[in-house]
Length: 217
Image 1: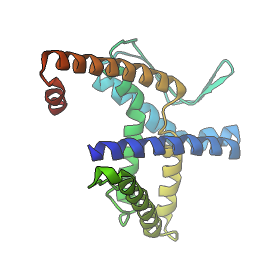
Image 2: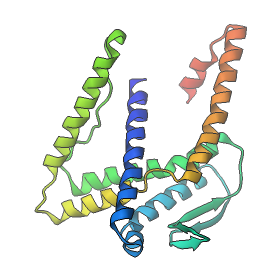
Image 3: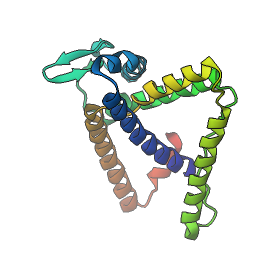
């Protein structure tokens, strides 16, 4: 459970930072340089969407990794697929850029920064009455993790600069687009309703299905 909580908190922070990095780079760079320099991030983002669609057996109707203008909106890349009401499919395809981008960054860190810390911190709460203390230690552990990563970077090495560049451009595209967020919200809402329904039925008949379902997942 604590690993799940740690993952959710870390994921939320990473997504917020991703939006922030993307916005800052868009303000610093011209439109042309933004498209060129951040193209590797677009490739990882869209191919992650593609992988999510393939793994969920969703029919793909269009795919592009080239920037284009649609009306007044600038589109860096796109994936279109058959419409579906399956909440698991909606969530999977929408969040795969976060999972795919994170995996690529992890592999790059192992290759380009071999001395980087490999294990992210995890929340550990021994006393539920002092949960705030466990949360504080979690934040402190992330601070130490960040400093360990910075010290592991050799700024005289070309590989370090390549890693920093790829981390920025891929990290800027970890966050789902507004359209992806709408799909994710719809999918999570449907899944939440299913959970509420299962929990209600379990309480009525006196059998705890949630434990069996969680074990299966």
